[in-house]
Structure formats: structure tokens, C-alpha cells
Image (cartoon, rainbow, N blue to C red):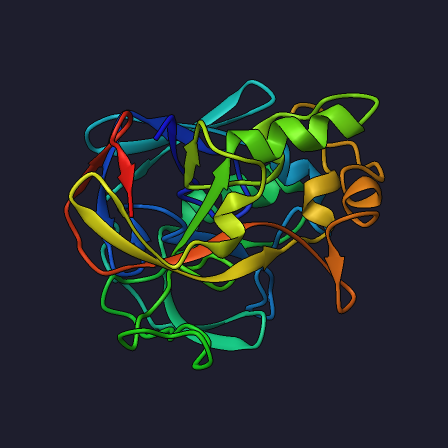
Length: 259
């Protein structure tokens, strides 16, 4: 495996790691926070493309967020203080807690709209789609599944078809691997990365977020326009494989994938 990524705050910048702990809901700290509007609805780059410009780094205790030269630090261990907030993410309603009104105020100022940063407790309930569950898994604040894996060969094949190659950050995977044929992950069911067994449950349908340049926040038509020409089925465009975990051990960059 060549790359490991987490995206602690939904729809903000990712952090590449050398190793991570595999949890039921996803990699440790992956999408355990999100921004919500005044009505409790989740915010994403699909509507607010400037969210791409928030960059995240991590220390032992803190998430450090920067936006156009402004910074704020967020404790990794968010206490469930205050009243629970019913937050909406797609068709799911989840119980979240505001991290801190001051932190929410900073994000509101940066985005130019009232919003709150909320955390989703590790024991919070959000079941994966019943049609694809294996062991009644729950998911974090990711769109639908705990993990996403993409082969570098798949990205390379797509980039050969594009006028301007795109980086992997357009697709927000957790795992990237080298070797093999393009799109071979589509058919993966039972596989192992290092000590961890995983199950591929369904190919990942892609949305307009993939058209947002993560460096500039500008929206375009690619890669969806090109992917639609050869990766479209039943009005959905697929790239990458959604995955659930059977085991929950540490995972490392360089781990071997086996079947």
C-alpha cells in the first residue's frame, strides 16, 4: 500500500499518514468532525467550494487548521459538552456536539456564514446501508462507508485520458495502492492489508466534489466528464471501492495487500 489518508473534518483538507489505527467507523480521527449550518445540515465542498482551502496538520494532541493565513487549533479529544445537536448528513440524522463556540465562530468568520463545528462521538450510531453491511458496521461522517481504496493504476489510466492530469486528492481515498491493473479494485471482495482483513462492498459513485480543484477551490467539469464516457452505469459514475473492516489493528504505509 502506497498511501494512507484521513480527512478529520468532513470536506476539508486531508492529512497523509505513515500509519493509522483501523476502527469500525473508519481510520482513527477520519471524518469525526463536520461543519453544520444553522439548521443542522452538513456543509461540503459540493456547495461551498472554498472549504477546499482549509489545510489540516496534526500534533499529538491537536488538529491545526489554516485558511488563507489564519490558524486555529482544535483538541483531538473533543469532550461531549453542551446539549446534543441533531445533525443531518444526507438522509441520516446523527447526534453530535459542538466542539467550542469560539472555534465555531472562527469557521463562521472564515466562510462568511454562520456555522458550527461539531464532533461525532466514537460510540455514536450511524449504520452503513443495510444492503451492504457485513457485521452491522457503523460509519463516521464519511458519505456512506468507513473506507475508500483506489489503485494508482486507476488514476494513471484516467489521467492518460485527461488533458490535464489530476492528483489523487480529488477523490479523497483512505488507501492508495500501486501495481496491478486499472480498476481491479472494482471486483475486490475479501482482501488483507498487513494484519487487517477488509471486505469490498460496492464501487464508489462519484459526485461534483471531484471537480473542485483542491488548491484553488475552482470548479470545472473534469474528471466527471471523462469518467462518464467509460465509467458510467445506471446514471452513476464510479471510481474507487467502498470498504468495511473485519479487523481493527494498526495499518502502515508499505503494508502488503493479499487475497
